[in-house]
Image (cartoon, rainbow over all chains, first blue to last red):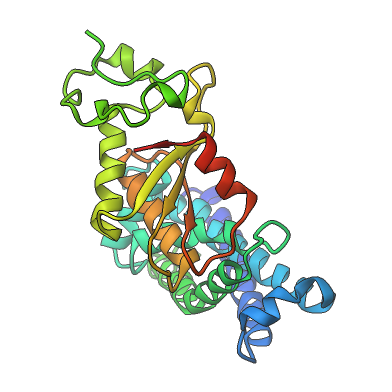
Length: 159
Length: 133
């Protein structure tokens, strides 16, 4: 499908955003999980404002990258390829079939998990620590998805 | 013929066994729109929880879906497990996704209760107001 100048601009803009988001998430991820992230550390977040801010940066960056990919770049890319776009869940199933994401269900679970990464309202440290560790484990997959989708955009000459 | 449950108060049907009495295939579109959660959806949730955690696990519906007069709202579920759960956040999120799939994309939130998890006020609220599916 031929791209209009405005959709090319949109691709370029999103590519710049996604690359920055990947870089920033990778940095925070490395700093936050440099040491074992135990329940005790999570339970003491209220007394450790610097670490609490770093947790918040991680969750914010994780969320923004996942949303940029799933809610912005994915529908744009599917549309540009002439695929039918629809509800988020259908777009993710297509992305799985196109091998841009490993698993639509895992993607959705991670999205759901984000609600359990917020230390102000998740009162069980076991749940909070588990959610953050699972987010950390998903970071490589999230960044790989960004690379897969950007590679596709680039290969089509849309950047 | 009323083909699916309409519950105005949880106690009206809690423990009646009505849920499992073959009222799944008689729904109409009109009933669906007025229904907070159809019998078919309730059975689907029950089946998924049993399949994932065994017959000893229970699942309760609580929150806005219990009230006919409210529109929309997520499906809030409390799942009570008899044994400790190793990855509570992941287990809850994955279960919510499975149920969302079964409910045609409806938003689902799952709260877990298990012997190794901290007991919180939300557990009491869900246990008090919720209905067992």
